[in-house]
Image (cartoon, rainbow, N blue to C red; front, side, top):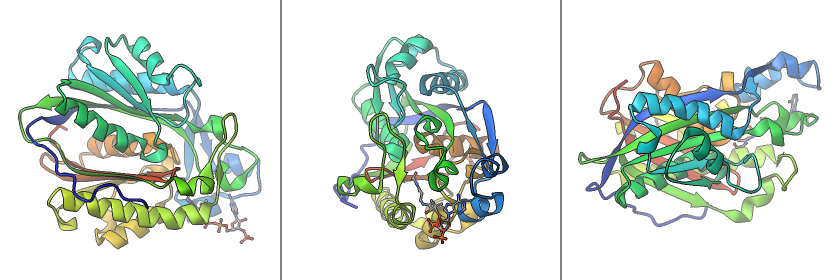
Length: 322
Ligand code: UT7
């Protein structure tokens, strides 16, 4: 992957903490058995090759984002008027124009700027890092959302991709704080020369060279994660929990092995969500919070990769109450 600058030290003077979170999933459950009744595949193949058992589809990108954001605002105990900026990660906007974040801003009653950010499946981490950057510029509360309706860009006749994707959203409120920043280290990368291995034309559906994406994903995730860990002044042993992009359990296993972090320290929700692109890391993070797997002071590694190809990682010291 094309690397950004090696060392990106976080300025801890203008820090921030995660104070709210929420999720939403598409209404309709689609199991592997449902897919097997429509195309030449099987529950066994999908589970063995991907780790996915079922996914939820339906809704709009704005609708799922609003649902997740309402819970995040409630957990944070803040009103829509108190949000200074909305950053919405999505690769499946509802309209070409305007940005989906404009609809979310309107539906939530926010009184602030709003922007979409498309870095494919790395989009949530890109948006989170952007949000922390805006806290450093003086914003006090930022809503960061990853929301996707991949079912709308899935070719339901193509068994090599139709089995993978689902719809959902995850939202986080981050707030300025005088304490040390929750964001300890980060890394963002992109290599646009790899466009052809994973893309969808405007109005088209996802086309993917699965094996090539798989190979590149493992390397990109590992490199990005190690850079973030180094930028945070930590080592892999300091990481309490890894929240990886939820694309394929075998990708997660390979990356964890290369990072020398035991698989038990990773979070996986893909068996019940499929790959929800920029919603996948927030869905997994909220799952871990709600399961009581995260303690105050834990160093979390969020790491994703996706079309572009992009990759992104962030080290977050958890300070939010669980
Ligand atoms: O968010 C980022 C986006 N994407 C990813 O991260 C995806 C990365 N890639 C992958 O997860 C995997 O490459 C896939 C799950 C997409 C495919 O798994 P694979 O182990 O790489 O399978 P393959 O493409 O090498 O195909 C193996 C065999 C082929 O049959 P032959 O040629 O060996 O007879 C395929 O035609 O499996 C066949 N196959 C299927 N069989 C049953 C492909 N899809 C299916 C299917 N059901 N759904």
